[in-house]
Length: 334
Image 1: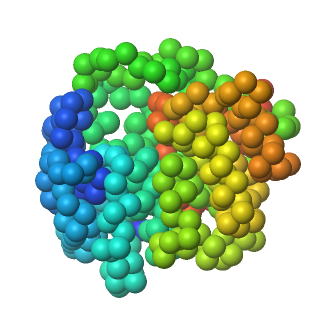
Image 2: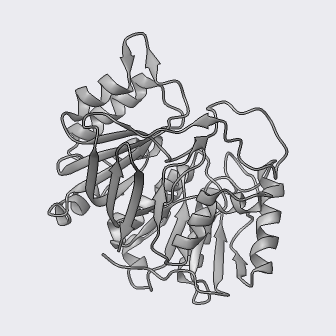
C-alpha cells in the first residue's frame, strides 16, 4: 500500500470542487470561514477552479472539474488535496482522468466524503494508495468544532489516533440553522452488533456511500476486484452508508455488490446511519443485512457518513473495530 504525503505544519492544501462548489448557503459562509481559520493556523491554500461556482449541476463543466483535480495532483507545491463539497455528478469526471498517468507523480492524499467516493475509491484501487473518507473542507468553518472534525485534521496530518463512538448524534431531519452553528447532537448514539454481543472486526478497509459505489460496478473505473485479490490475506472490511436510498434500494445495491464479487473476502461490515428511513413494514436493516451478507460480523448505526458526527476513515488502512458493552472504538494503521 502506497502512503501518500500527509499535511505538514504550514503545508499547502489544494482546494478542488470536482462535484458541487460552495455556491450556496450554508456552504459559502462556512467555506470562507474555513479558509480564514486555516490561514490563521499558518497553512497555505491553493485554489483550483471556481470553488464557489455553479454550472449544470456542479461547480463547472465536467472536463474543467477533471482538469482542476489533475492540476492539483501534479502541482509540486500542493501537499494534500481537499474537496470543498459533495454533490451528484462527480462521476462525470472519471473519463477525463488518466489514472495510469497519475502513477508517475508523487502520491498525494485526497480528502472528502459522499460524492467524493468517485475519487477516494478509484485513487485507492488504481494507484493503490490511502485515501480519506472524511469531512469536506467547509465543515472547519463552524464556530465550534466537534471532536470528530478535529480528529479529521489529526489524521490528515498523519497522526494515528483511536476514534470512539460519539455520545450523541444529529437527527435524520435537521431544522434550518445559521451557517456557522455547530452540530445539533440530540440523539443518543449506540453502535449495534448484529450478531455477537462482543464484536471485533479486523482487516483492510474500503468503502464509501452506496449511492455512488453502485454506479462504478461494471465500468472501466471499477478495480475493486484487483484490490480485494491483492489484500485478501488481510481480509476485507467494508464500511457503507446511504444518502438517498430507502431500504429497498439498499437491499438491491447490496445484492448487486455481492453478486459482482465485491464481498468475496469480506471479514466484516460497518454500516453508518443512513439518511432515509430504513424500514418498511417487516423489512428493516437487520433482516436485509442477514439475508444479503450472511453470518459475518456486522456493526450498525456507526458514526459513518451523512448523519453527523462522522469518523474519518482511511481507505486502504488496516482497521480494528471493537464494539461491546465496555467500549466502542476504531483504530487504523498504515
